Image: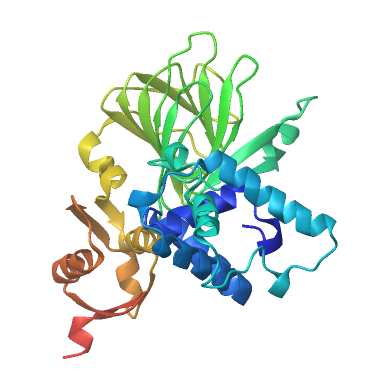
Length: 361
């Protein structure tokens, strides 16, 4: 978000969602960070909240587009007049301000409600595609990036209609519009894809050194840059999986209900039958661990719940853990893991410590 003097329409929409109680947890986090960065930002939001509370929604029938124009005109008039804006804020009001002015400012907070209602706010920035430049293409183009923090998920729809659900601590880069003979995106983390079929323009997911190519299907890719392997699971359709240095025709082909895993420097494993429902639980807030080292369990919990986890018995980090949580809540997950592994845990806010129980008896 911008400073108070340079707020754009997107910033106003975000503030509107916050003061009216319609913001997502991600939006609330973004607004509160912005307010904490400058006391003027916090005061601005508080004033808009007061305006909202002073005018009941039942009596609010102002033309929001017209209100926005009036607000911008007032601001520009002040700037052209060379007068400093008091307290470095866009506006200041007293409780004796006429009721019509409250309506105007409430309109600013209310603006474009119909457009943004139910829309998942996506923080998207333009970046240059280093991967495209490295591939030696003569004409580079700009990619957009959608990224999530720990404890967050996001959804995005590409220009071709392909829908993607992005897991926590993940990012995906994609063009604003697909061009050329392929549709290529770049993933760091985990995402579920529902790809629109286009026989003439295959869809390719690039993650680490692995390429996943499809024509039209639903599948899941898990491949954080610091993970040991990339995992691909197909729910519907067919995909091919190969490494960057692997010749076409030597890839592993996956069909509905199968998965593969690719470790760095190795070829993809042969297709194996997969428990699709369990492996896709994360989309609806669940968790699934299939005989993975406990160190990986800790990493996934940190991503999923935005916590920091330590353990006093490092030998436990290599112990395989299997568990499924349909609707994961942190305390429940910690209790089940502790009981099944015969360990204890202490949680203080966002900090969790696992302790070997037999060392504390």
